[in-house]
Each structure stands twice: as structure tokens, then as C-alpha cells.
Length: 80
Image (cartoon, rainbow, N blue to C red; front, side, top):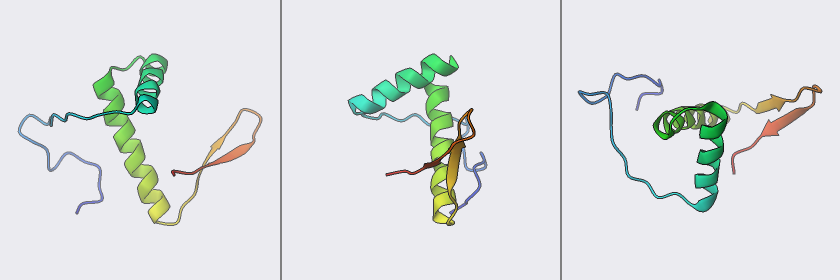
């Protein structure tokens, strides 16, 4: 399995269609993300999956991910 996030194993069009079921919390998160970024749902899903893969891989490697607020306060990101 490749660990690189690239398009080498894409389809001829570079697109793959999925049908998914979302819980209410995920639908709300999608609405917030599209409102904040102005991106459409497809672009938001594409970006979200890439970020998720990055975070999961980093955690698997023993890394920790933090956000830093405007006041300099750090908060560790944990996926549960």
C-alpha cells in the first residue's frame, strides 16, 4: 500500500464516485466547513479525507498534533 497521497492509482477520469451515509453530526460539520471555506461538498470531502489521512498517519508514527490559539495557548488534537 502506498503511503503517498498522490494520483498515481486514479481512474481514467481521475474521479471515483462514492455514496455515503452521514450521521447528523457529520452533516452539520460538512455545512460548517462549506460555509467557512466557500468550497463545495466534493472539494470539502476531498480535503477532509486528505487531512484525516495525514493526522492518522502522524499519530501512527507517534507524532502529536497541536493547534495554537491567538493567545499562544496550545491544544492537542486527538482523534477518538
